[in-house]
Structure formats: structure tokens, C-alpha cells
Amino acid sequence: MVETSLVITVGRQDAQINGSDDRAIQAGIDYLSALGGGTLKILPGQYQLNNAIYLRNRILIQGSGSETVLIKNPSLQTTLAVDSDWYDREVKVANSRGLEVGYGVCLTAQSPHHTGSNVIKRTILAKDGNCLWLNRPLEQNFWSDHQAQLSTLFPIISGEGISKVKIRDLVLDGNKSNNQNLNGNYGGCIFMQNCHQIQIDNVEVRNYNGDGISWQICHDVKVTNCRSLNNADLGLHPGSGSQRPIIKNNRVAGNQIGLFFCWGVKHGVAENNHLSDSGKYGISIGHRDTDNTIISNRIENSGEVGILFRQEPNRGRCPHRNLVKNNDIINSGSNGQGIGVNIEGETESIRLQQNQITEKRSQPESVGIRIGPNTRDIVLSDNRFLGLTAEVEDLRSGPE
Image 1 (cartoon, rainbow, N blue to C red):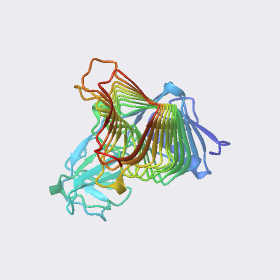
Image 2: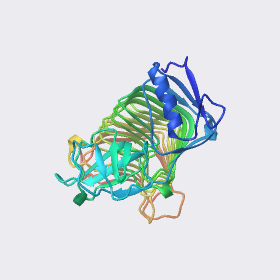
Image 3: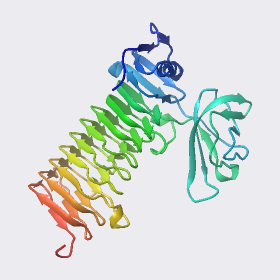
Image 4: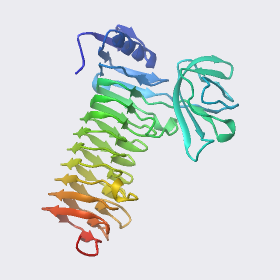
């Protein structure tokens, strides 16, 4: 997929590009990109990041396994001292101490035009006192009386509008305890938007105050043999509109939700993943997530539900035609309200085959499969249940 005839090494010493931060790694990527692509080898060592590593087309990033660690520096935050409008490229902050040229920043504010928030990511290009010039116009309004703030928040590795990229054999550490939260629609240890043909293999993403790996409107993404550990929000986040994601052989542990199918994720495969100790759900699937296969996963110690088919406001937005097969779902829920698989809303055409749902604890009111009252065409076959109060709780009132 990626042309590898040109190879550049980056390292703390004895490399073609020597350095220990994002600037050295970015320099190697930009050099390869100018020559049509190639392989960037990051030698062993710890690299401290003040900005994201921005990928380009036809790039392979190759680390040295667990010996290559990219870690995000602690975040800083300040408020905007004056209003900035959508066409501006500069902002004036209350305190610019610690902010330097080249740093990645995230601006947030309550929107003055609707009830939501404005969120953008930029890079500081120049600084004069408390005035900062950014690499692109704001494109949204950030007004000081609408809680406008600037923080040094960014993904560790990011790509936008690119294709034919591989990332493998390295560790990304979000330094969660020293950073604020960044919503997974805008960041993560790895964050991709409007990309296709992305492969992520044998990468550990950990301790990010947000998502582990998030890809939005990205097609043909493969995440294999990775570890997404102890991130604040979602372990793996195939985002809105993403088609044909392949998610195999990953270890996902200690996140709020292990695997989250966002909006309109279709024709995906989640196979042979180990998802454990999720705060809420091992797997969550909902808004127009159709025609996906969830097969041969081990899902254990989910805080509420092993696999949740989310409640949606109407039939057209429900997750139809999904196959759940040969999964091992163990010890779901807490406080006496465990559910292995919960199918909510007007979801229809779901096949649950050859799954084993087990409760090994002394927990009352544990349910294997709960079928909501407005669901249709839910087919169960050859599932096994152990240690449960109720194997199947069917809330439908009569024939479909």
C-alpha cells in the first residue's frame, strides 16, 4: 500500500534526523511526503510532544515496538481576553506563559448562535505578548463572554483527508492525569477524519483523556493487534459514516466504552477482540449502524451491559441487520443489574448465534439477553447461558 523505497530514521541520537519531540518526527514525515511517500522509522526512546504528528499520504510510520514511546506533554489552559470572529487568524489570551510557536492548541467556546459548542484545533505560528497567530482562520466565533478558552490539547497522531497510511509498532501515551479532556469527535491518541485505507497494527494507545483510537468519516480502516488501555472515554471509536472498518485481535481494557460504533457505521467486522473492564459497555452500537458483524470477541466485566443496541428515537435510526456470533460475554453489569446483550428501540433483523453469556459472581437479576418491546425479527440460535437469573427476557407483548 505504501511505497517503502525511501526510508528516513528519526531518533534521539544516531539517526538521519535527531530530536526528541514532535518537530523531529514531523520533519521526517514532511520530507517523505515531498518525495511521494515512504517509511519513517522512529528509533527507541521517549519523545515529548507539544503538537500532534500530522500524517501525509503514502506514509508508513514504523516504531521499535514498546521501546518507542510518544508521550503528550501536560496541557495548559487560558481564556480569551477579547472576542475573535470566524475570519480571524489571531487571538488574544489572558496569559500566554508557556505557549510557544509550533504548539498545538484547541479552542473551545459556547456557540453564540446555538446551544452547542465551537471546537477547533490549530497550531501557533507567531507570538507577540499575549497575541497568538494561528495557522488557519478560526472559521467559528470565539467570544470572551461565551467561555472562550485555549488549551494545548491535540491528538498524538492525526490525519485529515489522507489515504494509504500505515502506523505500527509503537506506544502512544496521553499522559491523562496531566491533561484536560478532549472529545473523541476532535481528538484521541490517534485521530483520523475524512481518510481512507488506513492501517494501524501493533500500536498501544493508553492514558489519553479522551478516546484511544477515533476515526470519523473514514473508509476501509483496519485496526489490528492493538492495545487501547485506560483511556477516559472510548477505546475504539469507528466514527460517523465510516464504512467497512476491520477491527481484529485487539486488547481493549479500562475505557468507559470498549468499542463504540458511532453514527452510520456499516459493513464492519469486529472479530477476536478482548474487551474488558469497561465503565459502561463492552460494545455499543446504535444510530444507523447496519450490516455489521460482531464475532468471536471476549467481553468481560462491563460496568452495565456487555453489548448494547442503543435506544434511538425512531425505526429509521436504529441499528438493523447486525450479526452477533460466537462471542463470550462474562460478568456484565454491577449492583445486581447485569445484562449480557440489551437490544433497545425499534431495532430489527438482529441475529444472535452461538454466543455464551456467563455470570460467575453471586449477582441477582442478571439477564443474558434482553429484547426490547418494540424490536422486531430478533433471531436467537444455539446460545448458551451459565449462572444467570434469566437467560432471555423478551419484553415484546405478542407475535411480531
